Amino acid sequence: MRNNKGQFIKGNKSGKQFKIGSIPFNKNTHIINSGSFKKGYKHSKEILQKISKSLKGRVSPRKGVILSNEQKNKMKFFEKGMIPWNKGLGNKTPLRKKIYFSEEYKFFRKSCFERDNFTCQVCKISGGLLRVHHINNFADFPELRTIIDNGITICDTCHRKFHKKYGQRNNTRSQIEEFIVGQNN
Image (cartoon, rainbow, N blue to C red; front, side, top):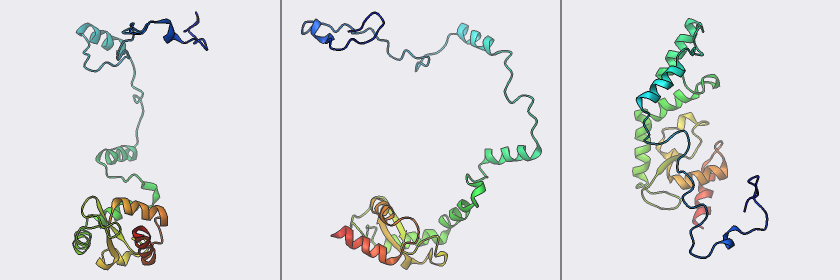
C-alpha cells in the first residue's frame, strides 16, 4: 500500500486485500516501452518537419574551429586506422602484429599443433580452442619465438590458468612442467 505521497507503508500487505483468483490492482496499467525511443516507430512527416525546424539555426560545436595541417593529417590517419592505439607507449603493437601474421610464425603454430596432434598437453582434450604457448617467454627470448621446440599446444582454459598462476613474464620450462604435473594429479 502507498500513502497519499506515493510512499510505501511498512507492514501493510497489499496482496491480502484481494481475493484469491481476482485480478491484481495494477494489471495492464503500465505501458510497455514508454520511453522516448520506441523500436519500429516511425515519425510522421509533420513531426519530422517540427524536429527539422527546431534544429535549424543551431551552430555546430566545431564551426569556426581552425585546424592546423598537422591536426588534419592526424585526423586522416585516425580515420584510416593507421595510428596504433598505444601511440605514446613505444609502438609495440605493430611489431608484434608483424610477427604474428608472418609466414614463419604461422608455420611455427601449425607445426606445434601437428606435432601435438591438435591435443592440449595439459588436460589431453583434443580440438577446441587451442593456443601455442611459448615455453620460454615470447618477450624475453626473441630468438626462440619461432623455434618449434619452444612451443607447446594448450587449450585456452589451461592457458589462462597457467598465466593466472605464473604471470605473463619470466615463464620457464620448469614452470610449464610443474603446471602439467599439478593439473594431472
